[in-house]
Amino acid sequence: MQPHRGVLILVFGILSFVACPFFGVAAWVMGNTDLKEIAAGRMDPSGRDLTQAGRVCGIVGTAIMVIPLIIVVIAVVGMAIFGASGR
Image (tube, rainbow, N blue to C red; front, side, top):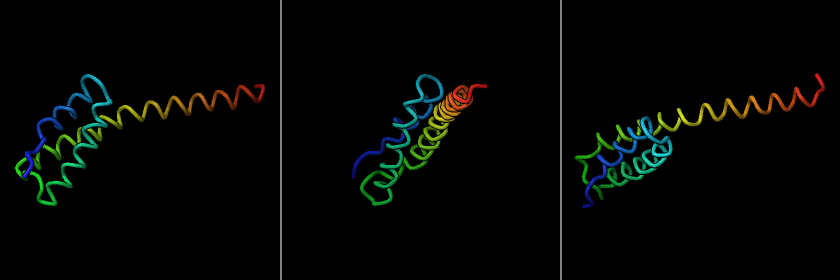
């Protein structure tokens, strides 16, 4: 049975708020992978709670990164549309 990476995933999830939002993507992906391994019985189940917490932090950290990008894209597209219309 493989050891869990719950602490690492939680640290990545927290770092997505503090340092770099791209850690959130890593925490999200690693958390999904590890939860599947735990459910299949190939990974130590004692890290399930840490892994879930890190995964949730990663999802929130990713959302915090993506939402402003979507707003910027909408603003740029809006300016291009209104700028092209000659107003």
